[in-house]
Amino acid sequence: MTARHSVYLDHSASTPTDPQVVEAMLPYFTDVYGNASASHQAGRKAERAIEQARETVARILNCQPSEIIFTSGGSESDNLAIKGAAWAARQQGRDHHLMTTPIEHEAVGRTIEQLASVMDFERTIVPVDGYGQVDVTEFERACQPNTCIASVMYASNEVGTVQPIHNITQVARDHNILLHTDAVQAGGQLPLDVQALGVDMLSLSAHKFYGPKGVGALYVRDGIELMPHQTGGSHENARRAGTSNTPLIVGLATALEMAYDNIDHYVTHYRAMRDLLIESVLERVPQAQLTGHPHDRLPSHASFIIEGIESTTLLMHLDMNGVAASSGSACKTGNPEPSDVLLAMGYDRQQALSGLRLTVGRYTTEADIEYAVSALARTVQKLSRLQTV
Image (tube, rainbow, N blue to C red; front, side, top):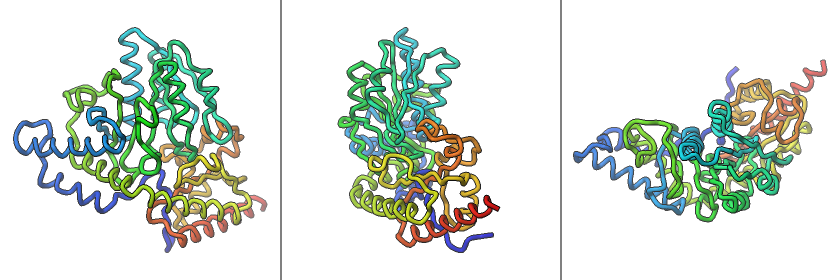
């Protein structure tokens, strides 16, 4: 069965690359193709483009260009921040305790798990409440004299909850702990002023804000020692080896600039579509329960538990009806295991198998919402009937 209508509500997984971003990238595939590390004119042109992109990102994040490292995406940025800082601390014989939360993206969670299991770092998982928010008091209680780094995401990729990051960074600073935040979902939706946020390191990925896949950025506050986990040449100020991907870096900077030049317009649209979506789902699908914080949530993000209906079955039927959705993290969709995030928030195993994430974008319309909610209501009603037969 192929649906005639198509509605994309999985923007937290990936967004389409904006045509203006594609246009900005094209010359660096065909005309300015030199290696940015080369000393000849073609190389210098590519290097200038990369440094201009670095300046653009730094301006939006309110930091120095030298504090920006370009990477292959959010996962690499998270790995470089956590492993790089932890390895540097270990090499200097300093602190060896790590802190994080149970709702992080796997790029953070598994990295810290690896450091604990392979390199004997100590770790503490700070609990969250029923909305998926970190209790700042619990965070401070978990701080230890030997804590070297804490990683707390800015906003949840699975339930959309925004963390009280300002308060968390203040506690970390009071205890002389480096604070990394995975801001991949926040890019293009929430403020990224690193001075106001108070973070020491911050990860971004371009394809979450209408840029290309395969490129990301990591902010590292000046003075932080970072041991590279990818070795080779002295690229990115000797912190990330590998030939610079000029077109994708230009695409990231262009997309980020477009997102923040028009941030008020986009966020207003996201909120309007999100609120209509949440209201419609809760009104027309009796089995639906909103997850995540009711107010402190990403402007584009709606997430639910559909009681009694497993995500894998629901998503398959929605897809056949032309609705692209997910159960949570795109890195976990298709996994029949219950959501670790929902379990950490206090939901039982069956509920944690029934998550649904619907995320709107720049081009989402009221008609899209109407179609998607109608398809969801019909599908849930059909599956519920089948289960009672």
